[in-house]
Image 1 (cartoon, rainbow, N blue to C red):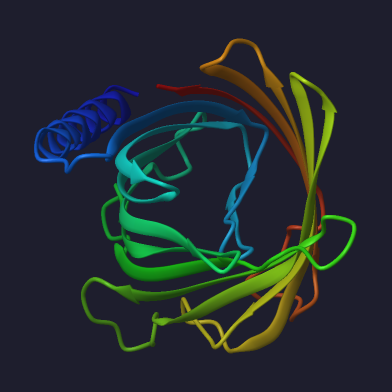
Image 2: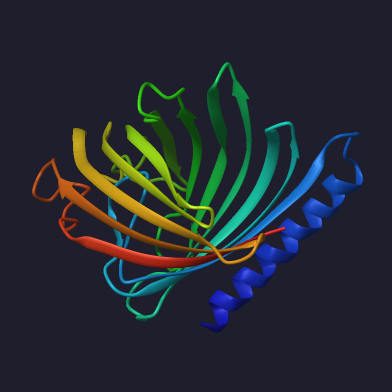
Length: 252
């Protein structure tokens, strides 16, 4: 846990330093933004690939800073994954991206670096993009996300490839302080991490309830189920189960 704490401290210092520089150089109308997240999960599935990342309880901590102007902006983010069991690897991910909205279409794209802090494990670079389309009916929003990963270092087996998933989501405002987000999606890949291509690797269902404790503080409780649609030993193997989690989100 000492290594995890040190990695988070380094990430926080780096990101907040960058945010201060950006804020100092901001143009008129640009607003600094920041968000801190601390989460707990009974197990964890990788959102992009559908792979089982952690099979036992773990915690994630995230810090993000950015600049926003009329719904468009830039951000830097660091996220740390700390398993409670020593046999699972620790990881820290770094992101640099931008987001905007054009004609009702929301775009979020950027670069990521996945640092697996375990001797002999490959680290990854990635470029990613997420698109939310205008609602079609009943406030249902179609979305698609894609990411191309490429490993740092060489390997006889190709570890690089494209990950993608998409589906439908809708948010319900249950109370002025309580909202419910529901999402269904399917995903696949072109062959990655040494596993052959699976056009449809998984199907996923997710619900998330958000409680606004104060103007800046939220509690989010989530439940996710996933089904392996690919090969029995494919990328989404051993994910036919319930994943539960909770997170405290502080924005300022």
